[in-house]
Length: 345
Image (cartoon, rainbow, N blue to C red; front, top):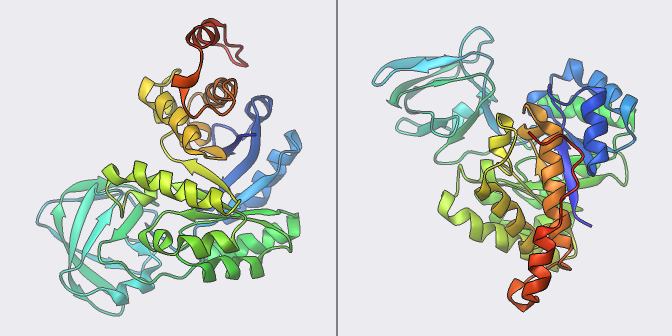
């Protein structure tokens, strides 16, 4: 049975949408701690539980670098000083700047801007813009050379304590770089919790087998993974991770850009549908809707379309080779009407 994980956000934190997602087969509601304030977390959990019994998953911030709360316009050739201040543009956790050296490159928001480190001191770093661009708050930052980052943020620790209090039994470990991170998470959350380790870095790929062994499931985050692995290699890497995870009898989920066009549009494009179907063919246990249900305009339509693709896939008995199917059988199935739990435009 293929699973669908849905991310809760402004578009879905209401009774109509939560029930619509449930009616269309949502297996787990994901709360992304990277985009949820700790002061709001208990209220979000309460709201979801008010409308459904589907389990909730806390998705940690994890070992990642992000911008702080300020928008910023990096102009080509200009120099800027980034400090550990709440009143200026910076990056967090700021402590990682002590691992930087002059000449290091920092990519902000998937190469929206690129800066080069000029000077490093205890309280600030001076950078020069190499590629100009406007960046927003809480955007992903990549230190090109790689740095050692703590497995969990301070917000994560607070969320784990709250999760224990609220009886949350599902946790996703962001940027699972090694099996030690997985074991550390197990020690912080309720006993017998279900741990989903997210593979989204080169280190995670290198330590994949040990991470799988200590996890209950794997999630391939193709977005963050593509910050360190070129786009052209992601399809092959996806197939490899799925194969290795299934060989060890663990579930493996795939996330990022499944129906990205539906964040704004009522129907997907053909490439997205093809991607979903082929991801199922690869052997994925389930699919993760992120922006589509968190901030998208059509969250219920998005999950309904994923469900329809899964149903059609299942109708061919986990079809691995459609060429072996009777041609008339395929045509008949294609011409059968699809039942939708949403209003098609």
